[in-house]
Every structure is written in C-alpha cells, then in structure tokens.
Length: 315
Ligand code: RIB
Ligand code: CA
Image 1 (cartoon, rainbow, N blue to C red):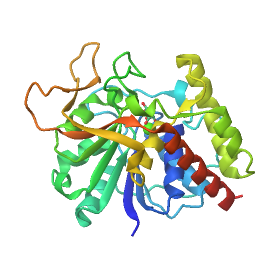
Image 2: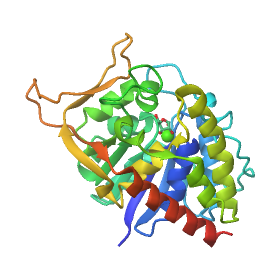
Image 3: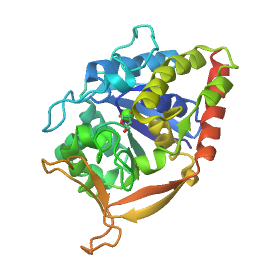
C-alpha cells in the first residue's frame, strides 16, 4: 500500500524537485499540495505547484493555496535564491488548472482528521499553514502519522542569517507553535541537507536523456547553482527538500537523534535560530527526531535514478 503524503511547500527550485521525486516514487501517493509564502509569494508558489504537476502529467493532484504572510513577522521572499518567479531560469507554461477553493490549512485538517494515522505531512517551507492548522484543530497532533520538517540548523551555520535557516527565520513563531505542539516531527536541518549537493556532473548525467523534465531541471538548477557559487562558494546546489522527501520511503539515508529542540523567537540576532539541548539540562522529553547524520551518495543515487525514470516516461 503506498504511503499517503501531503506537501506543505513554497516552490521554489528544491521544493519542485521534491514534488518530482514524490511523483517518481511508487511507494508514495501524493494526496494534495498546500502552498505557502516563502521562496516567492503564495500566488507564485501556487502557480508553480500547478505548473510542475502539469509538466509531470499529474494535474489530477489537488493544490490548495495557504497563508500569504507569516504569523507575526513581515513577509520575506528570496528571489535572489530562486529567481523572481521561483523556478530559476525555467519558464513553464502558465498552468491550465486552478487551485481548490478550500484554504490549505483547512485541507490539512480535513484530510488528517478523516484518515487517522494515515497521512504523512511533508513540510518543506515556512510553517505558517501547519501552525494555523494546529491552532484551528489541535487534534491533528494525535491523528497525523508523521510530519517531516525541512528546517533549522542545529550545529550548522544559518543560510539566511548567521544563526538561522530560511524556513524557521521567515516564520519563527509558526516554527515555535509546531515545535511545542507535541506533533510527531522528524526534522532535517541544514546539518544534513548541506551534505547533499546536486552538482554539474549530476545534471550532465540527467541531460543524457532528452525530456521536458531534464530540460526543466537544467533551467531551474542552473540559477540555483549560480546563487550557491556567488553567495556560499558551493559548486553545485543544496537540494534540501528532495532529501527531506526521500526519508518518507528511504529513512535509512539518515541517522537520527531524539532531541529537545527549540527556536529563538526573541527579537535579537538569534531570531529563528534552532538549537538542541544535547545534555538535556532541563530534563524535558524529546520533542522531535532530528536527522544529524546522512549518507549523501545513497540519497543522490536514488534521486538521480528516479529523475531518470521520470524523464524517460515523459520523453
Ligand atoms: O533553507 C532551505 C529551505 O528554505 C528550503 O526548503 C528552500 O526551499 C527554502 O524554502
Ligand atoms: Ca522549500
């Protein structure tokens, strides 16, 4: 039986790769996509989600627009990282399909509550929608199967401020609500995602296949690689979100620790910083399972194999 997943996502170049990886994974059934502000506006992340599904012949999957703004902070977008339209140099046709009418947070509640212990939520953007769903219906804590969260930096430098990762910096208050809710979280912080670099050699392997999928991946990741080179002197691009998604069907890619993790919501330089109480000074029970080790090649091999399979199916 395939695992039922719902994305909460801000496509976004790496988010789009996570959606493609899910579509190429027979272990998974994508029940829906909820969009959120983050890499670009929610209007744009919603259009991008619809366009990616059309590119992959998966327009049957419903898309639900979520929150436009963080819970408390001003909006922060990242056109320098993902491009003005959020998919780098890729220019997909405007989608023919439209988002559903229901708000994304209401879809999360409805689907999780109607299928107890069935739904895996893959949250790979700022956590605004998830926090709102928790406030509207706290019982999703007991009814969701698992929540995979791409976010935070535990012992790794931030990628948005010196201390904070983008998703938790954009909406730290939402992250605080989610982290303290008791919902079953598996966190993939920058500590592991920054070991998963998609390189020019990886792209050249995919380009051996002539397909709209490989052309899209080339056009979107070329922008992302230029960003990583210019801002962080990384040769390639960090594909945070597909690595997170891969744990839904291949958890052995990572090693995990059960930790007490919190997020700084004070107004100083540490806003959005995520940290673990490794010595459990406060004697609290762990509030999440954190991926602190990763086998990068195991992940990249399965990512490339499945992108090749998807590309061939649509060539
Ligand atoms: O910090 C990386 C995360 O922020 C990724 O999910 C990326 O898509 C952005 O949302
Ligand atoms: Ca994302």
